[in-house]
Length: 168
Image 1: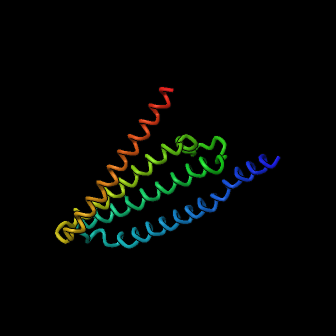
Image 2: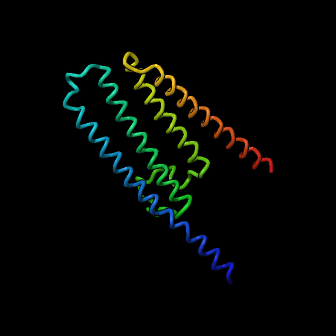
Image 3: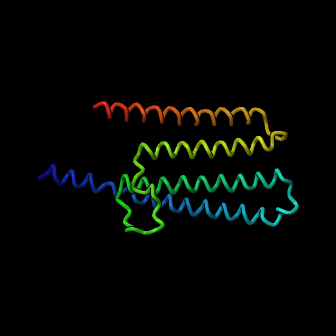
């Protein structure tokens, strides 16, 4: 009886994660506000801007968009994996991956998004290579390559674990 109540309490504790996911929804809203701010700031200047300035502005918008996608994946997958299934029925807009991304898949998607965001940041720095600090550029490359290697190692670890599971 005590064991059953304890297990029920532990199982119910998953709901303590729900405020975290609501907080991430607020963070997604903050990213949207920043995206709109960047868009409104740059749109009036687009006709007089240099090509590189337009590309940098677009890369900034892409960067914010990728961060938003990353947040959405973490919100949906994290909530569904750790709290409760999201019941939207057979809504036609339900993403196909929803409910199918396990923790391992989420890790890979997360690191892939981080690598993409880092790559865009690095590309933005290369677009301004004339004014970029060489030490900063070096460290941006080191950090980016660290993300790439981390992603490869995570994928390799998942592959080894899956191969071991199939062997059993």
